[in-house]
Every structure is written in C-alpha cells, then in structure tokens.
Length: 109
Length: 115
Image (cartoon, rainbow over all chains, first blue to last red; front, side, top):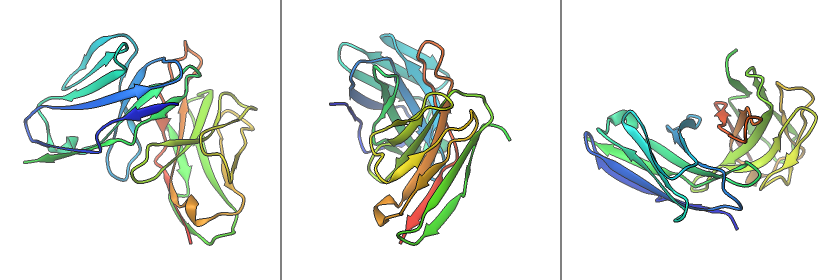
C-alpha cells in the first residue's frame, strides 16, 4: 500500500531551527513535495526533491534519501508567520500525489 | 482572473440535495484534481482529469461525479449529499505534461456542510 507518515504537531521557538520528518511508501517513486498550508487557506508549494540530497531555498531546505524512504523539511530562523501545517506528498508511478496528514507547526515567542 | 477560482466559498446543504462545486483555472494546465481535506487526514483525491475530455477516479470517488468539457473548468457534483461529505474541498491543477513533474496549484477551497 501507499503511505506517508509525518508527526501530527511540533512546537518551536521564534528564531530557532526545526526539522519536520516524513517517511514514505509509494507504488513507484517520482519525487517528494513539501507544501505549506496556513489555517483556512490553500496549500502552497515549498519544495520538490527527486534526487538524494539537500535542496536549499532561503530559510527553508528539504532533504531526500530514496534508499531510506525518508525526507525532511528544515526551517531556519523561525518567524511567527511560519506557524502553519506542512504537508509531505510523494509522487507515485502514475505521477499522482499521495499526501500525508500534515504537521502542524506552532511557533512560540 | 489569475490562477484557480472556486465557488462557492462556503455552503450549508440539506442532506439529499444535489450540489455542484465549481472550479476554473486560467493557466492552461492540462491536469486538474478534486481533493477533500478532513481534520487529521491528508488530502484525499476524489477525481482527476489528465486532459480535457478525460476523467479518472481517485481514492474516494463514491458519491461524486466530475466532467471536463474544456481545459479551464472542472466541476464536481454531489448527486445526493450526505453528512459524511461535510469537508473542505480543494480544486488543483498542474501542467503535468513535462517529464511527469506534477507541482499542483490549489484553489482557495469550498467549505461544505451537509446537515
């Protein structure tokens, strides 16, 4: 079966660093997406990884290990506006996205 | 318009009624999707369309139907609404042709309550 696992909720402090983990099992694999979703809003694209390694984009980085079926999203210099849910999604052999339930990130001052 | 629009923004519906959720995109994307999002669950695919004139079933298609008469519009119909269809519905689109990369762009969502 296909499955995406990520923690339900995490708490971090403003200015700190947080790592959100995601493990995936998909029928075939064509890449891993991270999306951000603020409460009451639509998901918006953050990153895409298809090769092993770290992709850095400003304060956000995403890592992929295909052999371990594992990814993480790293957020640096946390700001209050980073309080949101972060959705991990694996792309299967049919190029459909399989979504995790999301990790709610709470930022405290 | 720019991007994807959905209508209505929210709706309260009596069980047994028919309802169509509208979705329009102006990005000329070939692929479109309907998801539902429920608390504690990931986005679940209801139906999709890889190109105008074709549709396919997702993970949770029962009780829903779609059509794709043209590139821009992808309406979702609930033939006879039931309370378990209370959810937030997101429409998405992607330019799925190029090498399989499937970044999806989402509409603002429709919050549907079935009583």
